[in-house]
Length: 192
Image (tube, rainbow, N blue to C red; front, side):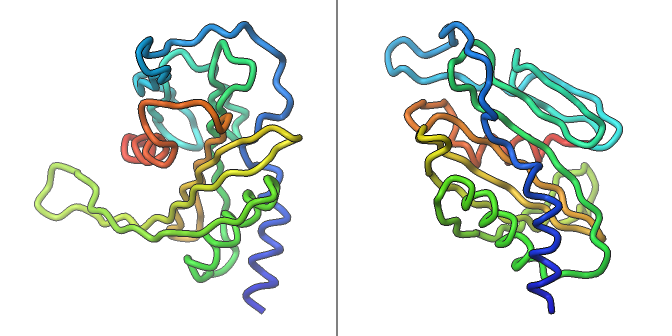
């Protein structure tokens, strides 16, 4: 019964995953570390949204807020990285681990890959004696999207009748100054 409900949810959520979606080619100009070819991701662009609150996103990335979904697309790249925020209301309580696994596996399936989930607990800094603890799930995987090698990470934060997902997909050969799961986690920690 639970698995039917979880997979029913996935039918709704699956279109909301961050993939390249055949972006228009752009000039190949990127800020990169000249010595190592590492592209710098600087989280310094604030974006205020009704649905997600304030989010801290990579500097100079093109941000779109449709009201239902927030995306940030890497500029000046032929195969840009894409970050997506999605939030869904849950009709009834669901096992958090199974929900996170189902979401991650649905994303990985699109890349013909397999996802494994890692659960984390972290106390959020709030400036008070007792701060809330956050439970979240992460996954990282590589696969092919339309024949192009892509690497992706997803962070799932289920809480109080809803689930927030952050996902990022990038060209597999590109090196960034932060690992993809760390990019998502830093964004999540700075959301207000």
